[in-house]
Each structure stands twice: as C-alpha cells, then as structure tokens.
Image (tube, rainbow, N blue to C red; front, side, top):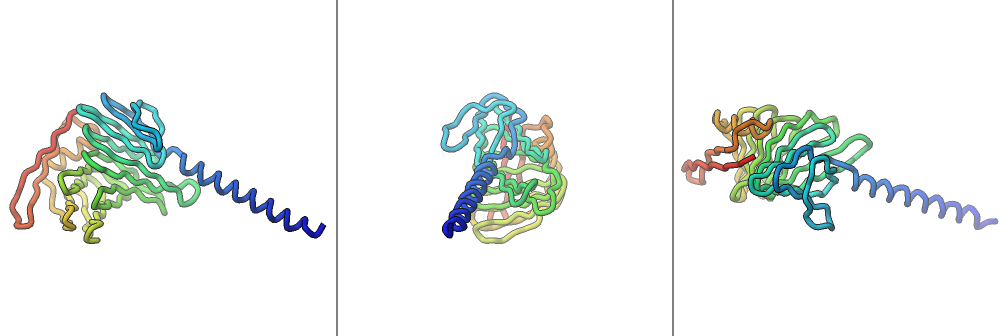
Length: 234
C-alpha cells in the first residue's frame, strides 16, 4: 500500500507528458494559412514529403514551402486574413509559432522572387515577419512588396511601417509609408523615398493589380545609380 502514492504520481506524470506532447504535435500541425489561388505551375512541400502540385483550398502548416513556376501565381491567405501574393519563379517558406492560445506569430521566408503583401494589424504579443538570407522585416500591419534580388532584399512600403534588420551587420532602419528599404548581403542597410513607379508596382503586387513589373533604383558603394527591372507575369 505504501507504493500506491508513488505509482499514482508516476501515472499522473505519464498522463501529463502524453497530453503535453499531444498538444505540441497538434500545434506543429495546426493550419497557419491556406492557398486561396493557384495559377499554372504552383507546388508545395510538407517535410518529409517531396514537392506536389498545389491547389486552391490546400492547408499550409508551419514549415511548408511554396514554389511558383514560369507565368504562375499563388495567393496565400493566413488565419488572420493577411494576404501574400506570390509571383512567378519565387520560393518561400511559411512558419507559424503559437506562444499562447489564440495567438500565432507568422514568418514568410523568401529564398528567391517576390511577393506582394497586405498584412492585417497584429494582436498584442503577435508578430508577422518577412525574412530572407540576410534580413528580417518586422510588420505590425501594412501594405507593400518584398523582393529578393541578386545579393539584396528590397521592401517597398505603401502603407504602414516596417523595421528592416540586416542579420549580417545587425544594423537596422525603419521604412515608413512611401519609402523603399534595402538590406544587402554585404551588411549594409538603407532606405530612401520610393518613386511613384515603385509605389505603383508595390501596390499592384499587394492588391493583385495589373502591373507586372517592379522597377528599382539601386546604388552601389560609390553612389552610382543602377536601374533594375524585374518582370512578372500573371
């Protein structure tokens, strides 16, 4: 009889562990977003499975990857109604992490290509971030576009405010509405007022408008200007 309390404690500990592990497993497999639209060649990958064709209505869990081929488009809708429009020849990974019930911090990691975004205002203790190989953009609620180019990431803000951090140098800059921010692979980070054309491009990417081009004006370390035009097709 003296062993009964120890056995009971063991059984209670085992039950709690099973419930805890079950909750972790459920959180890891909870739906973070869904594919609201898939045009032409759109694929997704849920580890450890290989790439498969993506269709409208497909659920996306944390860690899922999305790819768009030539002349293709994907629209991703998150559980908070935020929208990301993925342009052709792009690749990204979606992550969602829950810190408490009914809260979900989201991350869209852009490996290549571009997407437009319409992010809803986040709740307290929630966060929405855009990441790339060398940058982190923190969003509270805003409209614009995010592009991963050759050795740089560019974020155009049409509405709202974004904090852009370069993960190489740890330098950062706030990018307000009407501005474009650059985070370069060499560690430099900067912002300037966006041109009317850049703002129109970003707005069209974010809302699904008719423009298929992103026109960026870059500067090298010596201040020399270079125009970069990225063309997308729907």
